[in-house]
Length: 376
Image (tube, rainbow, N blue to C red; front, side):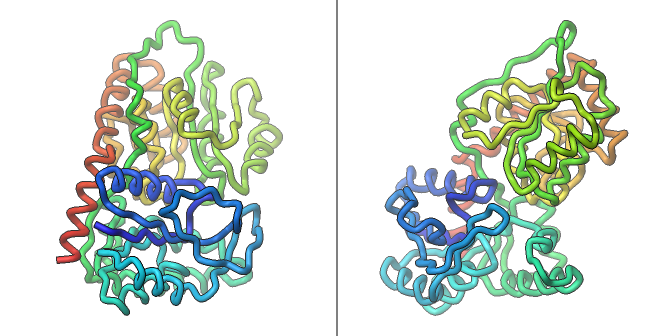
């Protein structure tokens, strides 16, 4: 097949959406499919892209809160010309705004099926739109996204919770649950069982963007109540990276000997952090999937997480981790895991087995089946 992926979010950005696009593209191309990624020109000539990445010309480029921003020139016309030139079998958009809208309009012009992955609970990110009252922004976003979903030919939901949410909006196009795949790199190591009896430290890990919606202060509130032999490593990036350090070390007076902040790491380095930790803690309640959950499980790392749409499909209580309701519940559950070697090893094994469902071979087959259904 010849496939167009259209995304506002691509390198130099990173994160779950970008990882999903890159991993899926590589898997599809390995199987002989022709995939083009259509995205924004954030850096001009400084991009080091493979030849299948096409950047839409963006004459206006600027930084906003350390984020690259770019405004495209006539994006609908540009994508229409690309469709005319390459004649893809399907257009797959990853955002309902900006290039997503342009791609849908262009696809309709040429009667090419268009599918959309609902990566994000968009209303929960209304705080990224400055200067306008939130009570106006959320309904506006909801209206735009719902209309967009009703207009595409098919929708991919990363989790069952998102499918249920969309179904309640009376959206008619077919919806298929297909989570984002893991990079093959995450299947190169195997977990090992651990003994907690003579263990000096019990290591908690969080990998996240440091943004308000990720709810990182919850982790500190939990950690404050844990014994001295617990450590916490936080890996990531974002607007609140320094703010969270101030909160941890200055406001809450957490010990730098027990709490470590590490800037964003490559997937290869992340493997080692996942492999060495004892338990992954996940505080976000807005993620539609949370690809880091599958990443951590691929290394046999169990998870404790607040309830949220991305957690319910992957976390099975007592099998590969636990979903908890509040700070006290988290503390009690962590202590239970940390003092029971048998339970901990059971969760390690369960986490590793769960992660196999996120191998690219399984996910890409589901994606291609959905494409063929939409095209037919």
